[in-house]
Image (cartoon, rainbow, N blue to C red; front, side, top):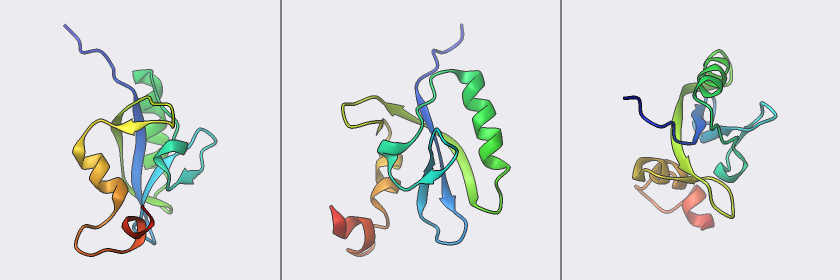
Length: 99
């Protein structure tokens, strides 16, 4: 029995800055999860992932991350993605200082 495909976004790290980024529907990269394209079809998600992985001059480590829909946009379903979204935990700076 196959598993039900859960909604996903494509995430990676920006090659130069190292920031966590997400693929938007217009093929741009965004640093805001709420602006990411939510993929609900497994075949389409795999195709979009292949496209993202081919952009080696822009990103590194692209993969599919589970999300759940919310009023404000997609929200991570796993603590790892929430942790990545808020940035480094060793000191208060960057994204953490903005929240």
